[in-house]
Length: 84
Image (cartoon, rainbow, N blue to C red; front, side, top):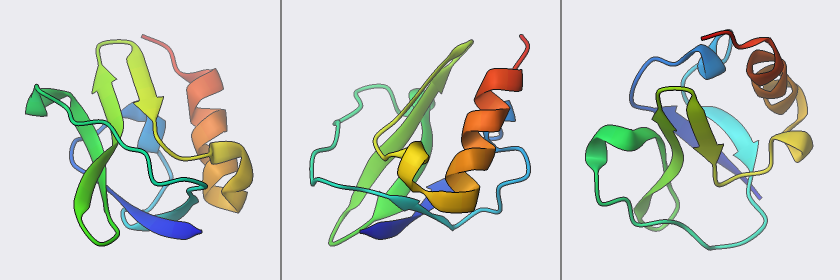
């Protein structure tokens, strides 16, 4: 199940990843984020939900980058090369 990720704030993790790129989701779980300042990316699939959060050097995603083909590999590369 590939769905579009729309990022809401710039982050080194999204370098060389066009906005609205497809990422692989395998389940319907999502997190309700109390602090909207943490939301780095959202996805729409029946409803809008948070799919990426970022704060300082912490970054988390709700999808599977390892199954997301080229864009997933780019995200993992960005994560490994990320310097704070």
